[in-house]
Image (cartoon, rainbow, N blue to C red):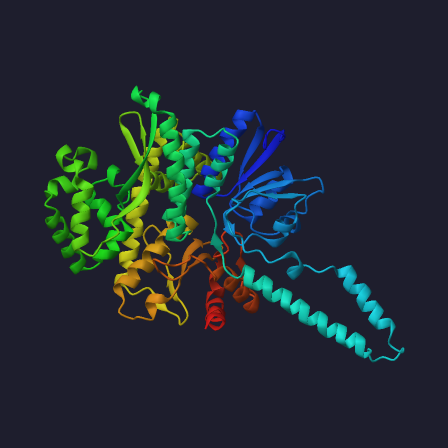
Length: 544
């Protein structure tokens, strides 16, 4: 009933995997209720403004500002917002007539109370006039008026301070796909496909380092309950396994990217966790890897061939063998809680496989296709009827992960990461191999995360180990722009709160640097190359 009154809906979706998964869940719900909708991919605020002129209605992961101020809608427009970006804009929270927020009840938003951040200006003016009327007509304000002005100044400063404390860090809440799935569940319209999409949404937050580890574990536990419920509900169907059936299973699987679709050797070499543990960019690291493979007792021929072609006897207890050897090499967390899906008898995918494949399709730079085309292809690969496209995405993801691994090795070996005082800085130069790939936010985020972890593993400087990283990569050579991204310090216990969004705004403002803050993640901006020096100097001053 929640959605049935919507006759015609415009669905604005940001280009991230969690948003795509939430979109798939919503599309299925709309299909159930025969709701007409228009799907509009929006890459940033400019896209959103342009698209809003043509359509109006529902937003996924693209609305963490005051929408009424930004879009100037008509009074009868109603916005439904499902957004993982935090903090939520206070106007969106307290406007309950035009803006409806779709947020889990147990998500603590930490929003300041209404009275602490909003004051009635008309009331203030009346009080001010009353105080002013009591002056004896001289130019000097009366003592009462002066006291009123001072009190008002203190109150306004207090309000600004509360608002600053609330808005200074950017972080992420519960996956939009999980929120949408639980909405479908409450309406008794949830399906196994919707559940799988919500699994991918949560896994995307883990892969792209958006949420703390404990939040991931909590959300996985929630999903596990839903998986058990669905599996129990469909037990009779599963007894007669059909060729197109779908099974979701909870797994305690390896932190090796795409290993079931690659060779074990290449997966180990291109996984952030193992590559950084061994320091594979060094000769000693390569020796360690050979020792690790020898310790597992697996023939090199088996390790270097495609996983599907490995002997069944080896594959059966491969995870246990790898875990045993990994413990000897101080890799205690080689396994992680996750889910797998089985389509029929042949196809098995881990949730992280699908995240990497969809992200590679979404940001594909190998063909000159529009962002909208890539968006639709990434959306399509999430459907079980499009496994061919998913396999295509996996091939793209392998090339992307290899490019990340090679770029990390190059940056570490050539000392491209510089300590700038309060943060580390790395700038990829034009002409670097695969540099075009890193002009995309998701690819640059993965590179950034991988590079910081590698740097922390390789540096002996204790102070540098606890610094955040800012990375710049060429964006548009003709316009002379770079994409700049900042990530918080590397830590297993980090709360993943990012202060760079606010810092970038202030640095650009104080130096009149030509920047474009168009991304929904405020820690990603575009910057004119000539302004890079003064922009970085301002950041150093600001954060010191």
